[in-house]
Image (cartoon, rainbow, N blue to C red; front, side):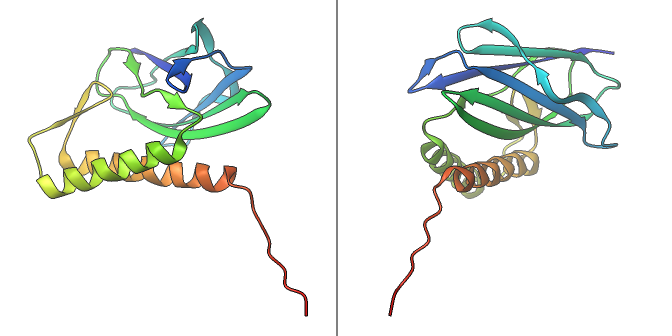
Length: 163
């Protein structure tokens, strides 16, 4: 069985910064078995860099990951998925807490470009080769997750009218 190392860098305005807390949960997508319980601390490995390693119970599994980051009194929860297709450690994309809308817009543009161009033999996703359908599915999931995060962080305003 292989060791999977998840590495995340938290950045604000493009600069890596340390956070108050960086935890995660890892769940097997096929069985729902908990690999790392919610609130499992990630190891601080450098400025803004956090890691967590675990032994994969079997090869070629997909995991649902949820990150909880506390920075400047604010809590940010970000979902992710990872499919183990090799024995190498992985480095997932950086998380950016200050530009969720820009990140969402970039993903939507990337999704449209990939759809317009049509299928290519393979795509690289977190250092792994995936087909066109898997890549589009990944982009769709990231777009939905960002929309949910933006909705959760946007203040709710109720407008009342008096007569």
